[in-house]
Image (cartoon, rainbow, N blue to C red):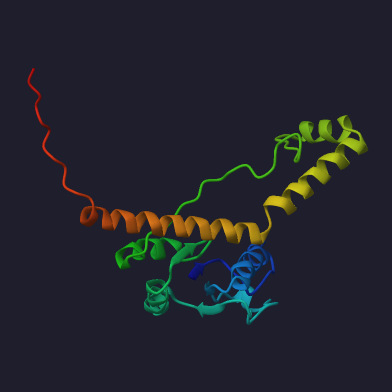
Length: 198
């Protein structure tokens, strides 16, 4: 499978949480022999702090101006099985407007619950709730919740799990599109309703 990702940055972990997440999420499909291309806008603050200037797990396409690179990105997308436009990608609006015109539609995933509140994660909306959690639970209870979160994460939420889930979504999408395209050719035409007389 060929995957093109348009993201904030994979080359610099300076001042953002995107690069390390992308690195893990891209290495997993790379280990599964998928071809990956990461498209990143070459901005000064990341350029001056690159800690991974040439990733070995994906092709890197750095650019400074969308208008100058758009044809190259669209060519990469044309031969891709899937194109992902990540959050905070600087030219996301231009990309998501142009991709459908070239046969690529963006896919939107809904947020979902990864950890069970109260059992594997503690959620607080106010300072008072934070204080209540910290003072109301014993060290043993906090440790049990932390261990449960770690166990669930390792069992269900690693980069390899996400790569497998991603493959399943793409394959299911491809199957559905193929089935919809073939349906008129393989399905017999509907017969007119017959009236029965008694």
